[in-house]
Image (cartoon, rainbow, N blue to C red; front, side, top):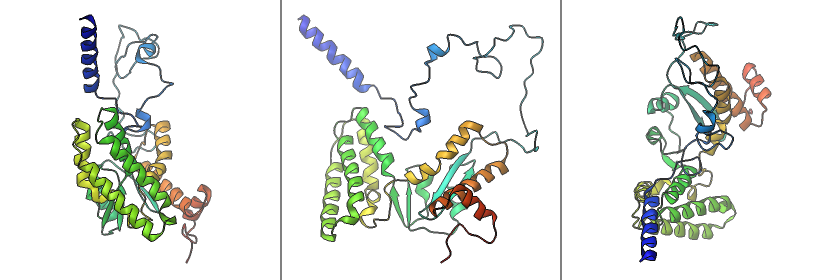
Length: 307
């Protein structure tokens, strides 16, 4: 009887753990690494041992203020003291539009389709590579390649959440696509055809599974709708499987934001975006940062080689 009671208690604990959703990190979701786990950061309990209590406009951590101040002044900054420009209070997002030759940065207070419309205007690219953010689905391109790096992390989250039916097999299929993409140019035409048929056949089999876990069911519904946008590289080997190039172009912008905590004015924001566009475009042409800026400032030179 005691053994049966112990087994029953273990089974109930297992059921509780399976219902508990895992924490999202940069390894199993689209969460940025800066918001993931950081080993060097102290826990809240350790950090709060020697901190003062928070006060008006302060989060705490410095010298303790007087409990009975003579006067309290609340100051709201409205303009830059140096240039007089109004300081934006809203969040802004940096967009990257790039291909093998050009990299264009824009920073706008919007994550909507209006930014895509502003930049692309009447231009209609052949292929659009992006994540699944809602505004990206309004792209003007003829074809859309979903970023498979984001999908790998989402599948990993499904595995961590307890999906044992769909997420694991879908992740293996996506990893096989990465391997094929690296070998694609070295394969014969007949071999490509065989691999292509097998990949889509296995995709069809995975989508026919019957997952019972919530995240597995959600991912299956997603990929059933996107199965035509997963493996465009099979038709055109120049199409990348991920938008990692855009993520890498944003790396220095993330460092700049952490150091400066943002921009004081819109013209500073636009100047920074222009400099990043020049530097990253010049990098694609084999130019250094100094050479790229020098060519941009010289009206007789160009970032692009003359044909």
